[in-house]
Length: 109
Image (cartoon, rainbow, N blue to C red; front, side, top):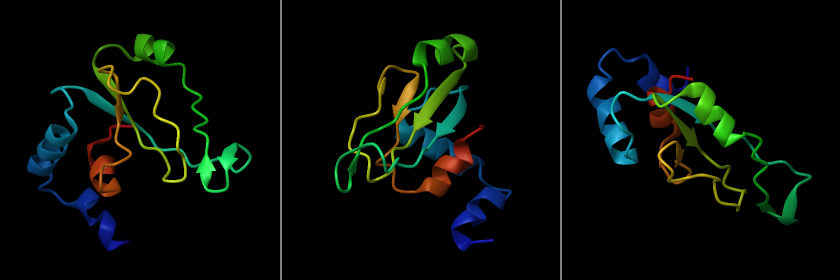
């Protein structure tokens, strides 16, 4: 594998997971769903500035998943739109989080 993915296979990740969750501000005990789509080249404002084609009904997702889940959303760097629902306690915008491997480590789905 790639060295950047070594964190996903280490047996001693518990402390690191807790620190990552603390940095993001995730409530304890929540299951984490990660959504990190790429940009769509047919949906743009200008070259290099793409729309966020967000196809998740947040109300439905929240209702189906219940209070024990959160949704982490990571925009592609080419996408300029904000993450819908970010900051509502269910959706967390992690687009600026520096390490994707960390986010993969804490994701349940």
